[in-house]
Amino acid sequence: MGGSNPYIEKPVTKRPQKPFQIRFENMNKTIVVPPDYPIFGTGLPGSLLDIALSFGVDIDHACGGVCACSTCHVYVKQGQKSCSQSTDNENDMLDLAPDVKPNSRLACQCVPNGEEDLVIEIPSWNRNLAREGK
Image 1 (tube, one colour):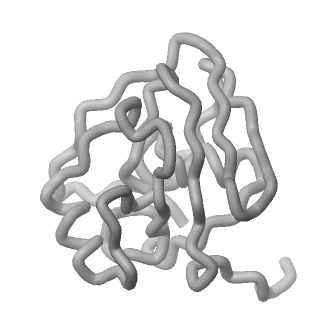
Image 2 (tube, helix red, strand yellow; image 1 turned 30 degrees about the vertical axis):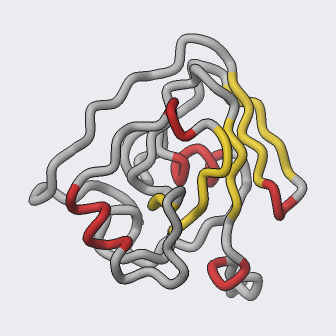
């Protein structure tokens, strides 16, 4: 499930012009994101959620990435300046998330522009390690 919520404001985003890295710190996984990576439409186009899922990094996202829950809550530990600004709608959803910090973002709404490498932490309570088979 994916898509967008037509009732919320969209942040200003920019596609990366060069490859950049995203290190998922507590998963011991680093991905190199090329500027022409495919967009699958889970969350905002080019969002951390969209990128993570396309590279096999599982981030829980109960609402399908439409900024209607807070299950994709992550911490941007490095590279936050290269990410889109959070919107009021994202901040409202973060108010519902546990253990919010100044570097908290919803992965479905945070769109990196590739100007810096990122270090992301997926909180342990947000990693669904038991999934049904397909």
